[in-house]
Image (cartoon, rainbow, N blue to C red; front, side):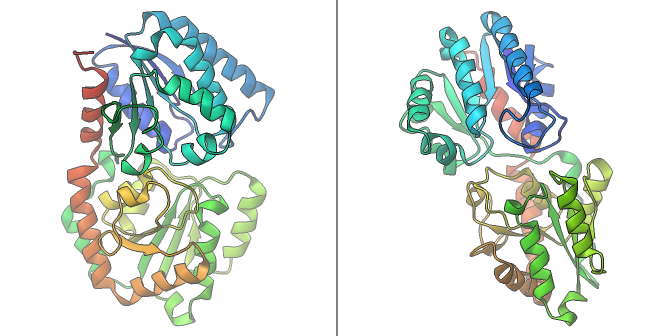
Length: 363
């Protein structure tokens, strides 16, 4: 069997590229794979430079080169306008092989950003979607995007995952909650306003002095501009209990999660299933989060953590205070999250489900 694999591999490191790398590494052990690496250097969407236009052109040339020998074509679809136009060109190039085609949606905004926003694009997407072999989504929250185009048997829910290095031992969870001097909150995501990092900082500032002294807040992630990063660093300069760690990976990222008690993601994005939340589960953290996009597929309020009614600083501050006052409840949630991460969200289970689908013999 030969697979044409069209997806972004790291760098940069993000949820989508981590997922693509995991699947790619497992596919090449089993079948022949031709890869079109859709990775880009910028975190911004769209055709942001002439260089990016040339990159996309090269991607399309490679798709055209490998399509004829492919038994299966696998594509990570985009949720931006220009990304979707690129995907439509790929469908067109592979129009004679759509019955061999699987698309994989990793985010949660494809419906609102593409299908509902642009009537003409929705019609063109519909033409191709009705003819492909299958769609892979993260969970029930995203199936409805495709219900009108495909039979339910062709829409496959495969939950997201965490990498095994983030799974800590049971006893380490108890250790980090017992004899707790400060409760550690962690924000680990792209440092953009819609992810909620500024609202979390402002929530901390709203707290009484005695509450501030009982917590530590760590921020880590990528800023889109040096100006935004410098502004943030200036804001936290005098806050002894707030730290920014920059972009973290490897051991540094593992340690941050392992030392955290509560993971905070007050996002206003229509999310998929953020890998960062599942990494936090595996690392023995409770979670504070907005119920955005596909997050309700992996998060139950009061069981996995605290659901924010909105992403405002006042609302976040209430949850921070509750965690400070109710550390026993926070510990119980962290233990629950650690347990369910092993059962439902391991990388091994994720890969097995994908391989069973893509490599099935009764195609």
